[in-house]
Length: 422
Image 1: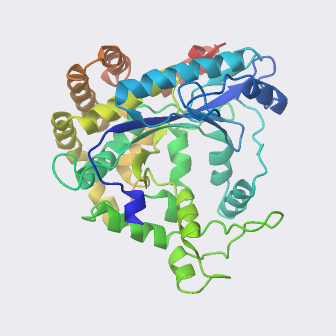
Image 2 (image 1 turned 180 degrees about the horizontal axis):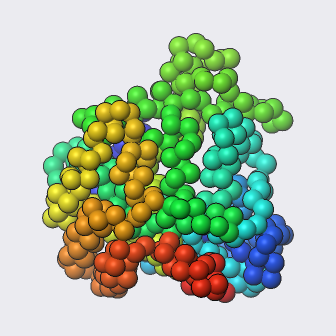
């Protein structure tokens, strides 16, 4: 399992997955008609390296609530990833604008409109049944949230780019990313009291698959193996027409020991891993799952910040030192098994964001370290400017993108980011 989930080698590749809500300003109180989304997707200039993806290689996925996800291919370096994703995203925006539709980058759907499952795949039906047994949060997650997910190589066996060090840095960085890029203060058209409602929703779901693995365990591969085995089995795949149900409370460890209806296969284990949603998920590479979707090209700022801090050893050292005080605050909660994202620091990040002075201080240091790292990276001048402008507009002022949505709501103007208008 560790060989598949942690592919060890010199860090080289960067990827990003960007999710968007689809809105139709002609009838904002209603879900977008499926045929309009289908027409927009069918008009896209597919081709790419494999003939089925967008011109720069990105793939598109329709999420359970009608969100559209663009997943870039692995690119050699930050600038190649951002440039290719921008080209494909421009094609996506144009195709949806031609249908009178708008792509909205926000962590939760800000509009008061019905949320519903638009896909009937057995996986999503199984997820719906599984999560419904523990409250409304799973359905909200599936139909009403969107994110930016940065993907980076796991790292070397040892040295400054060791996988263990990168794993630890990403977990320490998590609450700062939640706070700096918090962008989901509304749900069903109303303020929730949380700057990142999306993160709060995730923290209230099944802990066996949404909490972080034991962060203080020395070997991330062993910690992840334990996590996978102890997580409940969400579904068992079956032939067409049969529901993908699983016995309540069955963990994969139980299944291996004979508790299931049949012995599990390696394919079952691999699929089980795709149903786990911790803040950092190893999939050969490391996938960050804690950041709200962003307006405009805000996803590029997220990608540049994270990549700069992980790939530049000097920036990584600076970030680690700045994050240690937050980690010390979190250790008490982890000792009581309140692991991220249920720990106090993560809760403050989702609720107060960078209005919290300790999170703001750490965020500003991390942004400054990334700024210096991007200055050392050839061809990254534009991204460096974007990161610096974001830092000045938001964390330097104790603000995050969620505050723009709240300001617009109070003023009675827009409820969704103007940057996404067709």
